Length: 287
Image (cartoon, rainbow, N blue to C red; front, side, top):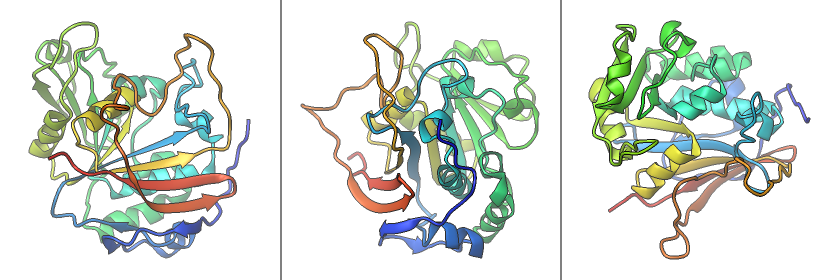
């Protein structure tokens, strides 16, 4: 297993030209370079994933289901994850992502504590006075409410569920916001429309920059509805492999677009850290 714990400066191969340059603190600016984002006056939904060379984003094995095994616990990948969380007003995850890292809280400091001071300084410079709202999407709401994301008080938290799922949340802490939305389908995993998730979040939190960290099925819903503006993608230099019928996941699951309705992105930014590539793709919003 490749592990890289020491942070190194990323080499800029292609730099985004649209949007305003953000006021990154000096150390973060040295490590990442210039970062641009669109105006904060309108909603902007972006996602961040790490994938292997052969397209695997999760090994789907107990103790090895998170992106850390895909990146090789890469320090620069953690730095970029922290940067995007520091920018976000809200971070959206599915119950499967929560289950893969049950003790986690989706803040910049949690993923890259070495740069905690820089991330806090960036949020202050952007006028953000609290950590990003952590949003857990779960149709059935079969959630352990004692987990840190709900009980630690480290970040404001929201659960987005269905009208049937809300029945399981009677004992949720009063600090956790809850939104019950209509399910698009019944069955084993009732789905909630991505647009409805964004609208529910924006009703309870001033969230224009919304970061989606998965999982692949939730991300597929956002792509299917044309709700995703940008994809940040780390390409890790490993071959994970697959066996017939295994549960290893790719970036998008549960949706098929090509060949009838392929989704094409535009590469706007690319940086290199050793053999890892950090890419940024823009996608046309839904009409």
